[in-house]
Amino acid sequence: MVQQRPEFARLIPRHILASQKTHHPTVIEEAVKRNASFQLRIADRITSFAGSMSFVWLHAVLFAVWMVFLESSPWPTLTLVVSLEAIFLSTFVMIGQNRQAAFQQSKADHDFQTQELELKTNTELTQEIHTLTTELHRRFVIENPPDGAAPPAAT
Image 1: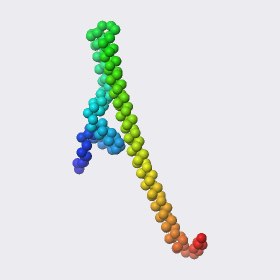
Image 2: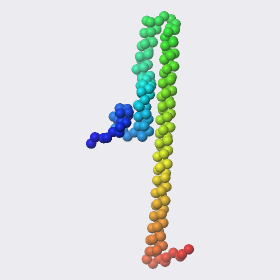
Image 3: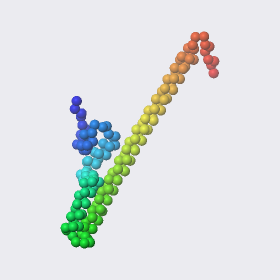
Image 4: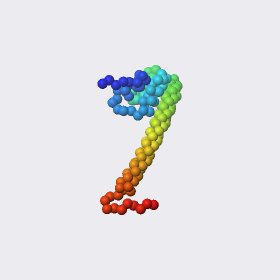
């Protein structure tokens, strides 16, 4: 049987769609929101690459080539390039942190609403059980006492 996908399925990242796990609704909502914005998709890709070992190795090779072949001591242009790159990368780190904070807040809100609904349902079930137990007690113990037992005195 082919699963029907919602209209916004094209906005859900492939790794979420491909996994066989059930994801928290907030994960799906946040992924759709992030994927809907071109700027956020670019920021996510840059942050993902900047946090990888490929990024580290690429920079180690580039800096070594730059220091040995392109510029003489004390490498003023390399220092400028590295400083500018650090400024931009720190911005992408902050974007990622803001995204994570928004996701955590959204997940906490969803979990709170779910817990409140469960509490309300449990309270209603407990009240119904109490009502049914009281009614059963009234019908079978008070109105129809067991054989040989005297009905309880009216209070």
